[in-house]
Length: 124
View 1: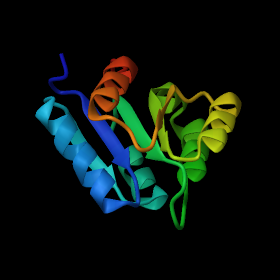
View 2 (view 1 turned 90 degrees about the horizontal axis):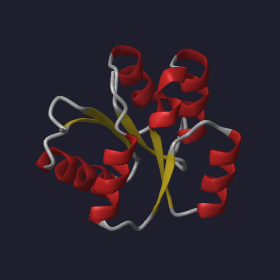
View 3 (view 1 turned 45 degrees about the vertical axis):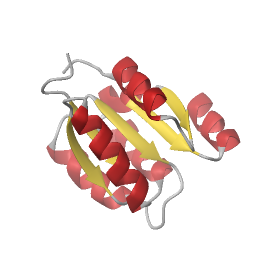
């Protein structure tokens, strides 16, 4: 089912980004990653993704900046966003104000990660 499904992982923490990439590739997802919001927007402008795992707190352009981009340029992808955050109040505030799909609290269990991605996997 996950074959040919594309996931974008956006997190400035390399260890989290690499771990999430490995887990999702093991589940047969095609995975791209970005270390900040600027890199994420470059990838979002060129590729359609079934799900986007997005950290809110990043240097430079943060997750809110990426959500602003999606709202203006790729609104069809907003509901496929899974916010990854240790700051749950900020994550829930963002979810209330935006059309994002889900929240994955950090630290997270790998089985929760897989379940969240499967549940947010939109068809393109």
